[in-house]
Image 1 (cartoon, rainbow, N blue to C red):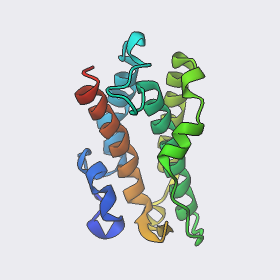
Image 2 (tube, rainbow, N blue to C red):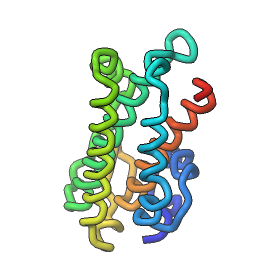
Image 3 (cartoon, helix red, strand yellow):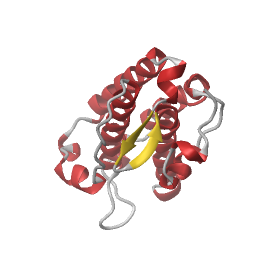
Image 4 (spheres, rainbow, N blue to C red):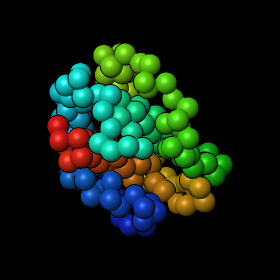
Length: 170
């Protein structure tokens, strides 16, 4: 499958897709998978509980958000690939963050979890046929393709790493 066209996803997700390059999911894995994992691993332990301003997430909370979001997006891709016609719900990332236990979690455990989720998502997408990748479903009443979700997953992680670099100066 080629890069998703604008008809495969709601406009909100264009910013995430813009963080990616490459023509398909396999290329995304080769270009970004280890870079994303290594970038989270490189964050100094003494910085993970810092927020760049009052009311903003700590790096640890942001990382939990990235983990949660990848799980949700991967589930969406699975449901759509399996031809589930249910309109999938949106989620409020702030509600998820306020109900998560990131502050109490061990950073190294989170890094291991992240690596495993990345591997699981990559294996899920490797299992999809060309026909599966073309499938479109509904998320919060918006059309989205499995193909677009693959790019969005990578773009979302890259977006948050950009925030870490820019706002947290790491």
